[in-house]
Length: 175
Image (cartoon, rainbow, N blue to C red):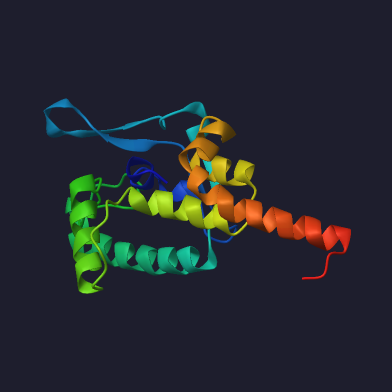
């Protein structure tokens, strides 16, 4: 998901039992420094995404912590039903996410990358593992499969090698 899409979901958009999240709105920084919710970037960006088991487990833990924060905040809590908030229920700022992400990278002794690079990494991993480009394109919310293939063409040599190996197997060529 794009960062704004990640900060937009309400809990009603997240089905932990069904392991899906629905992208219906994105958080955007407005003029004057405020934030507002807008439709996702493109019509294809409005989508449902299958969640990994690890993501569901993390979201369940997060939901528990958020409910505890809500109790602690009392009347100061702003109830927008957002999945990701600050400690008073208001939208979480993208700059805060970026700062927290950079700190986590540093603690883990990992190289500094942009938050958006996680999206590119996920796409490259999916395509490199043989996930059909159409599925990857839908998960990413790209307007067309061509956008996905153009952006991630560096993964295609691996995919081509896998395709050639599959043809060998079909033709009975011994490896």
